[in-house]
Amino acid sequence: MKTPFAITLDAGSSLLNKTGSWRTERPVYLDRLPPCNHACPAGENIQQWLYLTEEGRYAEAWRQIMDDNPFPAVMGRVCYHPCEVSCNRGQLDEAVGINAVERFLGDQALINEWQMEAGAPTGKRVMVVGAGPGGLAATYHLRRMGHEVTVYDASPQAGGMVRYGIPKYRMPREKLRAEVARIEQMGADLQLNTRIDDVIAARDEGKFDAVFLSIGAQLPKRVDIKVNGELPVLDAAIVLRNTELEEPTGLRGQVVVYGGGNTAIDVARSAVRLGAKSATVVVFEAREHMPAHEFEVKEAREEGVELICLRAIREVNGNQVTLEKLVPSEGRWPQPTGQFETITADVVVQALGQNVQTDLVDTISGIKVAEGAVQVGTDMQTGCPGVFAGGDMIPSERTVTTSIGHGKKAARNIDAYLRGITYDAAEQHELVTFDMLNTWYYSDAPRTVRPMLSVMRRQSGFAEIVGNIDQDNATFEARRCMSCGNCFECDNCYGVCPDNAVNKLGPGMRFEFKYDYCKGCGLCVSECPCGAIKMTPEEI
Image (cartoon, rainbow, N blue to C red; front, side, top):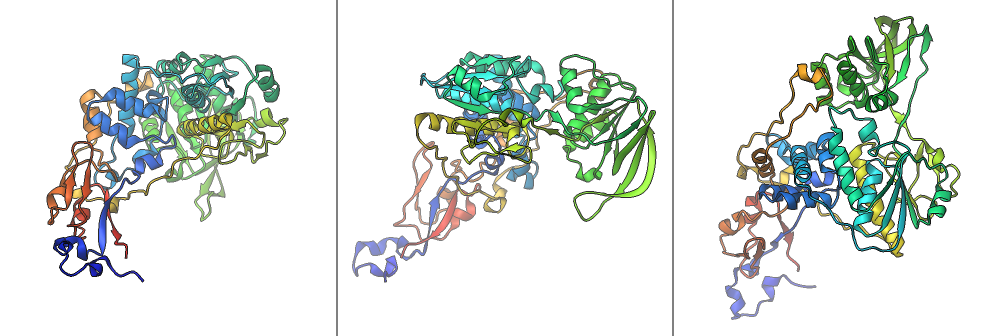
């Protein structure tokens, strides 16, 4: 059995003068995983690009984002920023405005025409079906790896549900066009107005070496509503698509939208902008359980949208919509009461979600579809060798950011498949939690508020409603980051060590411990603001 280090010292040895000889634990520097990085479905290194922004190195910060996500200007507008929900600073005062800074950097890239370069040609060809965020993200990463990519999409313009499902007041089309154009400038071939019905035949005809499928959820879900009369009952996905195509939407008079998600809110807010007399959203759930994001609901109500919660549409007679009152229950769904009321409508829009059209893969040998989703392995590959899938097509959360993350992951696995190797993702660091921080170090810094159009201007058209932050605010907001889990060289450990056992290595090099003199008191851990040091048992 080994004896403790201190007991093995020879009598009279000069090592007896080294105070570290009696240590039972030693401090170690480590990099922990920030919660913002961990929560990002696109896998961005958020903490790193915030640091670069804080330093005023905007082009470098943008390129850091572009390592993982080719759409910072888009995501700075449509991402629901789960990173901010997870931000440790939110438990101190308010979360860092990560989304606002990402949007600032994305717009800086468009203003300054920053570009990304394709990789050295590999001679391999990949077919991508679907020019939405997942397909375009995969295309971008595959081009950076040097593979030729051709993208097919049945729509007249690229963008998928970002274009055809998110209104212009949230996602200005010029920003989307510019970021798609950057991918085209890298050599991607976009074949629009081109529907693929036979994937394998198209793959073989085009002599492609691999395929990535990323079709968005565009088939509307419907419930049967008994309609007596000619009052139109429309589908939300079609209404929003027609709004984008500037075709008749059918939104007129008193508009009733059935659903409680973001799509329902988007339809109601679009109706307001198109001049509807009123817009009412009938919600199955209680107000606090609505799937729509809180800020979307708040803005909609400011614009005059009415909510009627805990109601189900049972039938339509003429222009009278019969609602059954519901009550909360212990289960997921509210329960009917048998009590009814009526409201007046000129049009009803169902906004109860969308499905994916999976008949595209029905004839492909080896591909399994379960509960409306294509089944894939951990490498994003289907049961058909060389055919990968992601985005709304596979079992996952259906968000733009998730699709972008799928595109990146698929590209890395497709690249490995083309090279005849297996892609192994890097092991994640330990997650840093709020209790690992010493927040006394951080000064008060109120969160930056993004400017917003007045309600009257928002109601009058589809102009973007949320403004950008300026350079000073972007830098300030980045400085609010607490660098959770990663040393930022504050010098606290260096200054508080009673044994002078911390060696400063120079700017950007961090520190090292002189263990011969470290007694293992743990003072450095207790005084490290960001949780970048921990105590580990001494080997015996």
